[in-house]
Image 1 (tube, rainbow, N blue to C red):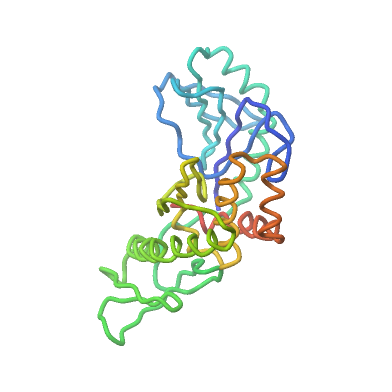
Image 2: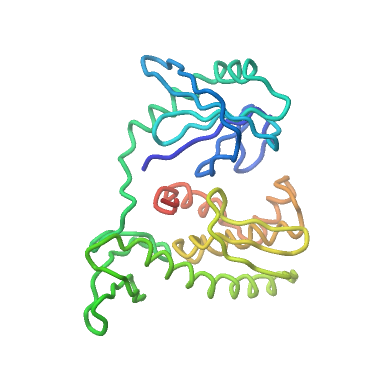
Length: 269
């Protein structure tokens, strides 16, 4: 799968899940809304890379983002200059080269789902199959039956709508169970379609979860929920926070590895 990467010109705190360099790598982030400037080209190795410059009034730092097509988007923060942005890019041409090599080695991802496609559901690869026992336009996905407009077309929109509804029913109920188990109070749970994170937790006790968690297995699902619940005790990613996570989910490192290994299948189209 082709994925994008991000470099931010800030020091990242060390700890579990963080890089110890001066830049941070993130995956599947939505490009920021920004005012575009003139594009330029940068030669990295022997490959020309198109640079898209954009000013973002809410950005606090320079951000270099490599898109799946091999172009780069450079965000200039308020008060920043294009000269400083160029210097930032030049300092990280090595990072761009590594990301380009990784992109070249990855297979092109087919974002359409058709009969016979395999997708993740509850942590397992499940094949999409036609089910003609009751409805003329219905597919089977594991234990789920999904009505679709056309068996011969792209089934992804209909299946994703079904999975999102399923997540909206199941995830809040699981949050309630785990919160009660660990004596935590949650005021509200929302299920959304975030593009850059699995979930979030506000100081007011609102948890927002990504519906795609329904594609993960129960252990990974519970880890993601517990991760957000522990933010009700520590609103950061400090060592104390990770100690709380490890206390309630001792094998969380395994869940993190699973998420990393399957990030391509769980990523939005």
